[in-house]
Length: 225
Image 1: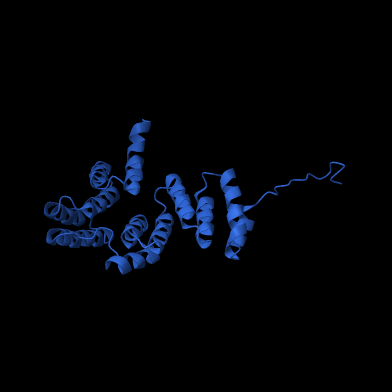
Image 2: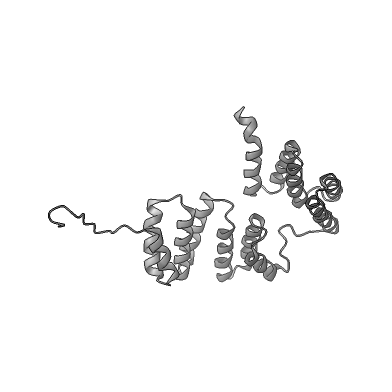
C-alpha cells in the first residue's frame, strides 16, 4: 500500500502532546526530551511544551540546559510562577540558596497561594513573605496593609484606603503598600488611583511583570478610544 501511494511514510513520525506527556510521566526522560524538543520546534511559543522540555532535561541531570529552557518560558510568559519555582529548585541544587530564594519569592509574588514555593521560601529565609519588612516602620506598614486587605474583604473599602494611607506615610518605599492600594482602588472602581499605585510599584520593582500587565490592562480602554 505504501508503494502504491495509499500510505505516506515518514522517517520522523509526528509526536503528539499526549504521547510526550506520557513519556515524561513514565520516567522515560530521554524519549520525553526528544519528544518535547520536537514539539517545541513546532510550537516555540507554547510555554507548557517548553516547561516540560525543561523538566525532562532536569530529570536527566542536564540542569544548565533546563535553566535555559525556563528562561524561554519566562520570555513567553513572564508571570509563570511554576517556572520561577523550578528555577529555584535548580539553583538550590547548584548550591546557590540565595539565588534560589529569590526565584521562590518571585513564584509567590505571582501566585500567593503556591504552597510549595511558600514552603521553600520560608525554609531558606525564615519567612514566606514576598515583601519582608526591612525596618520597624515597614513592619508596622506591613501590619496596616494586612488589616487593609481584611477590611476590603469585609467590604469596607474606605477603611482599607485609610489604613493604606497610614502605611504609606510610615513607609513610602514599601512595595506592598502600592500592590494593596492598586487592588483595593480597582475594587472601588477608582482606576486612576489604581494606575497611579501600579506606576509607583513599578518604580520600586521594575521587574514586576504582573504589575506591568495590570497597568497595561487598566490603560487599554483609554488607548482604544
